[in-house]
Image 1: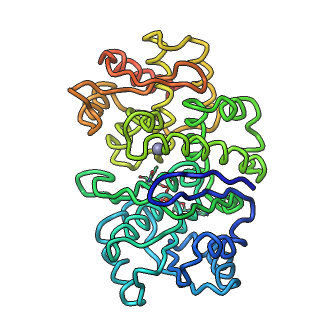
Image 2: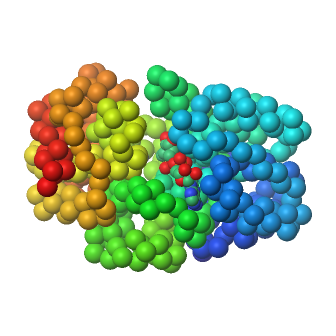
Length: 365
Ligand SMILES: NC(=O)c1ccc[n+]([C@@H]2O[C@H](COP(=O)([O-])OP(=O)(O)OC[C@H]3O[C@@H](n4cnc5c(N)ncnc54)[C@H](O)[C@@H]3O)[C@@H](O)[C@H]2O)c1
Ligand SMILES: [Zn+2]
């Protein structure tokens, strides 16, 4: 079992990572949030079916009153409409300012649940119980909540820190393979920008992780949570260090948007984005060619990626329109060496377009 603290105002909180933690969730919550006796567990059908009974009996087992509320599954339901429906369900169920919400699912449930908790009766406490690898290493940590608009992703939201994050790697056993791999790319990203140990494990000893061996997962997730805690604590509302976690995301987001979010899972798009960023870093001599080669081959060794079938210029135009642009130039997170990255704001357009063209070429290989 590992605990990682997030000393972020207004409350310090901890992430607990432990195989089988779901069975102890009630006991942990009773200890961490002694003032709460009534919980509303927000989830989606696949998670309810696989793990709902385990969580609910763990809560009721220690005398906590808990009710499940459901939202439909999928990114397309990460909307204000869903937030409104859920808030109304809470009113009908009699939730008051002293009730607490449990976001029990992947990043979508975490973002929507966090948003509901941020604004329901001007804010109630909530805890994250993430059930996808992506949510366990990233989305459930750091207090970013929000929903999408038709105009774009995550355009409406709040920072609202959870009171506790309970991570049980054993729930990943039921995660579809593609979702699991998609989360692995985010873990690999943590390795590249801040934890050489995680990178090396995925480079040379990845089999236990790919087999979802609980001990191997617990170790890797804990390392990623520690990195996120360090970064988020230094920078709770997205200034400098937090931007390191955007490694692979500049081109990744452009690929997702250009394919209308249908061709790539988020982590897969980020995987291609990391490959491109490694190429750009090598071309600009921000890193040596061996480091770039190790990054690229480790990304590509995790799983076959959906093909990139887009012209570099088209993706580049999309990327320029990205909200993160500063004075017209798009800042890139580029690797310096394994475990260390930097933000580079003057990347020549040609280097970016060239790297995206290389992704097309690699896709055909
Ligand atoms: N707040 C943040 O800091 C942050 C960071 C990164 C990503 N995100 C957000 O996270 C979202 C993506 O999250 P995601 O990848 O977890 O997707 P997701 O929440 O849609 O989950 C993926 C699929 O897996 C299913 N699932 C979840 N847990 C399962 C389990 N244990 N067994 C079987 N099936 C399971 C879900 O029902 C869903 O169908 C995006 O909306 C993204 O914007 C937020
Ligand atoms: Zn991401």
